[in-house]
Image 1: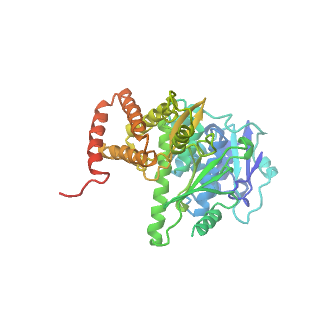
Image 2 (image 1 turned 90 degrees about the horizontal axis):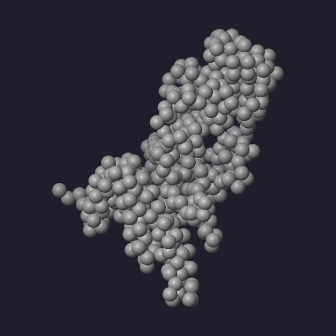
Image 3 (image 1 turned 60 degrees about the vertical axis):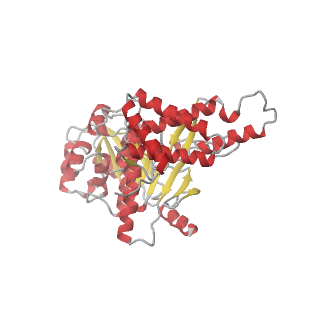
Length: 172
Length: 270
């Protein structure tokens, strides 16, 4: 688990945690659909996140869009999942990049809104049935899948995947 | 005026230490050591980043102004990303804040032995000055026209050709918009400042790009421009030939002759 503070947003303490062997992905998704406030996090399918650069780039994009009032989604958490993806449609992004019933590795991010309490890891641990890990982000990434989703297959192999993805995230 | 703009930039980029390195009519360029979103531990402490800030213009209608700033920022950023995808050497895009006119990119180039920024202009000036100051100049080859300069100029030509082969025109090619990056003891040119770039399928636009660079070389390096330009065009031609686009090269070079006679602006008569 890490607490991330981006230089331009010193007041926003963002929680980033990873879980392996998650058993209740389906349940989490159901609660998310219901709008249960205990599940007020971005639950991300770890298969689709290439690196810390990919994740942080999307977090940065989300905070900038929030500040500029140019968010496409209703909440910061769905905006984050939307920004992780190359899609124009939020539902497509949630389906591919958000938690799915068969997910066993997930990345969880909490961006507190104004006036909201700072996130506590214990609350999250009680919600996710799985093992919290400190592995580097991107370990569970399915590179072939991500390349396909971002349509990067025709490009030169020397190019850095994270740079390509981060760039297209910044340009959305 | 300038101080106000810098304060405005600092307000938008709160918490980011900014050093002004250049200011133009359209944008101010800053340097910083803070990455917009990656933690410090991931980088070398000497890593630097460039922030290009297009301020709002108070004399334009606010709605129009916002649209202009946003679209110019976005299109420059999109171009940088495209160049990376194409493998053309240019600064990598790191972050964009369109409505506020901010682009973050990688810092390129370093310093020359005399402490100046490693732009093509400074490099050539440095070489020319070394030649001038040399006393025992008889029998020895000219430093300003040595193999290294020849290699650099031909690589510059190749870099411009790569850009043109992708149907992109730079729009403001000068010897200070070409930065030299040191890689394994060799200087590799990188193009910067794509603020005036656009896509174009017309040989005319490419020819104008070459012409603008030629004029810039003539005025900044009046003694040696002839050789510089010749080597540059050799590198340019070779790259087109290697890409089997000789036909396009011929068209551009024919156009370049025309442009040299009439200047950059095509007459609008008839």
